[in-house]
Image (cartoon, rainbow, N blue to C red):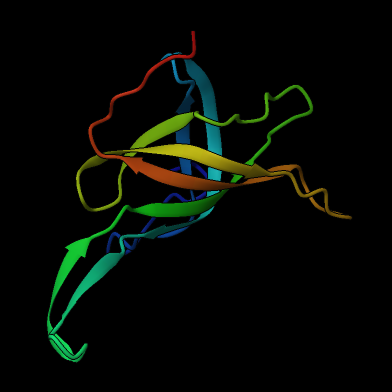
Length: 131
């Protein structure tokens, strides 16, 4: 709870998050405000046809979780997030590591600096620093 939001009746979840971003080597890059986080935990359907190609069964399995977010760039001295940077947070499934896999930099008239990023879940939280 921040000083700007001193009271929350009913512990209502809301708003954005402050995430500590790390580079692939695991070194902290600082805290960044993330907005509009949208995580997708898709399923994949595998179908099995019979000898004529008609439906004969199917299986549902988990697919790779992905997401999107907006990362605020606080000041002109703030380092822009890079590919491979990551953060760890609990979005209801325990602590997870989300890695930045795609970046765009919109420069809006009357807007603030921000980055639109795509995220990929690293389920084993294993990273490798570039050589």
